[in-house]
Amino acid sequence: MDHFVSISAPTTMDFIINRFCSIVGASEKTKKRIDEEFSSAWPSARLLDTNRLGHSRILQDEGVIQAIASEIL
Image (cartoon, rainbow, N blue to C red; front, side):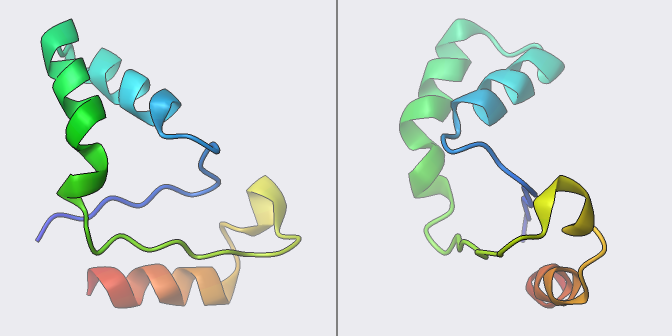
């Protein structure tokens, strides 16, 4: 099973999709396909909502670490 973890993600997935495509050198055609099919690729995706952790403390928060580990392992 493949896993994708995005910590402190932007409010839309556009930035992530654009950055990923840039890194792997994906064509515009591939980028558009990813954009249309992104949400259907991970129907079991879930959001872990946190409060007042900011961009730094979230990386050290035991609850966040445990939630990610339990999904991956």
